[in-house]
Image 1 (spheres, one colour):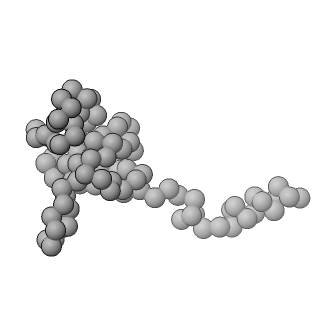
Image 2: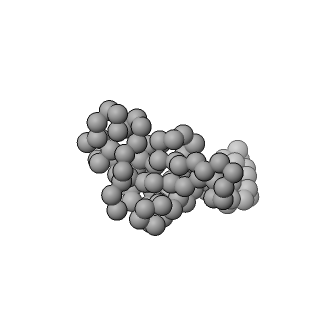
Length: 96
Protein backbone atom coordinates (compact mmCIF):
# COMPACT_ATOMS: atom_id res chain seq x y z
CA UNK A 1 0.00 0.00 0.00
CA UNK A 2 2.87 2.38 0.82
CA UNK A 3 4.45 1.82 -2.57
CA UNK A 4 1.22 2.54 -4.41
CA UNK A 5 0.79 5.77 -2.45
CA UNK A 6 4.37 6.79 -3.16
CA UNK A 7 3.91 6.00 -6.86
CA UNK A 8 0.73 8.08 -6.99
CA UNK A 9 2.44 11.00 -5.26
CA UNK A 10 5.32 10.90 -7.73
CA UNK A 11 3.02 10.63 -10.73
CA UNK A 12 0.69 13.29 -9.37
CA UNK A 13 3.34 15.97 -9.03
CA UNK A 14 3.99 18.13 -12.08
CA UNK A 15 6.49 17.03 -14.70
CA UNK A 16 8.23 20.40 -14.45
CA UNK A 17 9.57 19.43 -11.03
CA UNK A 18 11.16 16.23 -12.32
CA UNK A 19 12.96 17.77 -15.31
CA UNK A 20 16.47 19.09 -14.61
CA UNK A 21 17.02 22.77 -15.31
CA UNK A 22 19.20 23.45 -18.34
CA UNK A 23 20.87 26.58 -19.68
CA UNK A 24 21.37 27.37 -23.34
CA UNK A 25 24.48 29.36 -24.12
CA UNK A 26 25.22 30.90 -27.50
CA UNK A 27 28.90 31.10 -28.37
CA UNK A 28 30.00 34.61 -29.34
CA UNK A 29 32.54 33.35 -31.89
CA UNK A 30 30.89 30.40 -33.66
CA UNK A 31 27.24 31.34 -32.91
CA UNK A 32 26.57 27.68 -31.93
CA UNK A 33 24.20 26.92 -29.05
CA UNK A 34 25.45 24.70 -26.20
CA UNK A 35 23.25 23.22 -23.48
CA UNK A 36 24.54 22.91 -19.90
CA UNK A 37 22.98 21.86 -16.60
CA UNK A 38 24.66 24.66 -14.66
CA UNK A 39 24.89 28.35 -15.38
CA UNK A 40 28.51 29.54 -15.57
CA UNK A 41 29.08 32.15 -12.86
CA UNK A 42 32.87 32.48 -12.91
CA UNK A 43 35.11 34.01 -15.55
CA UNK A 44 36.09 30.47 -16.60
CA UNK A 45 33.96 27.40 -15.97
CA UNK A 46 34.47 23.82 -17.09
CA UNK A 47 31.03 22.30 -17.72
CA UNK A 48 29.58 19.21 -19.40
CA UNK A 49 27.71 20.01 -22.62
CA UNK A 50 24.57 17.89 -22.88
CA UNK A 51 24.20 18.53 -26.62
CA UNK A 52 27.75 17.49 -27.62
CA UNK A 53 28.25 15.01 -24.75
CA UNK A 54 31.68 16.39 -23.82
CA UNK A 55 33.31 18.83 -21.42
CA UNK A 56 33.62 22.42 -22.56
CA UNK A 57 35.38 25.49 -21.20
CA UNK A 58 33.05 28.47 -20.96
CA UNK A 59 34.63 31.93 -20.72
CA UNK A 60 32.30 34.71 -19.52
CA UNK A 61 33.04 38.25 -20.71
CA UNK A 62 31.24 40.87 -18.61
CA UNK A 63 30.13 44.21 -20.06
CA UNK A 64 29.02 46.42 -17.14
CA UNK A 65 26.24 48.95 -17.84
CA UNK A 66 25.67 47.48 -21.33
CA UNK A 67 23.15 45.22 -22.97
CA UNK A 68 23.82 42.29 -23.10
CA UNK A 69 25.48 42.33 -19.70
CA UNK A 70 27.78 39.41 -20.57
CA UNK A 71 28.75 37.22 -23.54
CA UNK A 72 30.14 33.71 -23.68
CA UNK A 73 33.04 32.09 -25.50
CA UNK A 74 33.07 28.27 -25.57
CA UNK A 75 36.12 26.11 -26.25
CA UNK A 76 36.74 22.36 -26.16
CA UNK A 77 38.40 20.92 -23.09
CA UNK A 78 41.04 19.16 -25.23
CA UNK A 79 42.17 22.51 -26.67
CA UNK A 80 42.16 24.08 -23.19
CA UNK A 81 44.51 21.40 -21.78
CA UNK A 82 47.11 22.10 -24.48
CA UNK A 83 47.47 25.75 -23.37
CA UNK A 84 50.08 27.04 -20.94
CA UNK A 85 49.29 27.78 -17.29
CA UNK A 86 49.10 31.52 -17.96
CA UNK A 87 46.70 31.05 -20.88
CA UNK A 88 44.53 28.66 -18.86
CA UNK A 89 44.14 31.16 -16.02
CA UNK A 90 44.04 34.49 -17.84
CA UNK A 91 42.44 33.57 -21.15
CA UNK A 92 43.48 33.09 -24.74
CA UNK A 93 42.16 33.74 -28.23
CA UNK A 94 39.74 31.07 -29.44
CA UNK A 95 39.93 30.54 -33.19
CA UNK A 96 36.62 29.90 -35.01
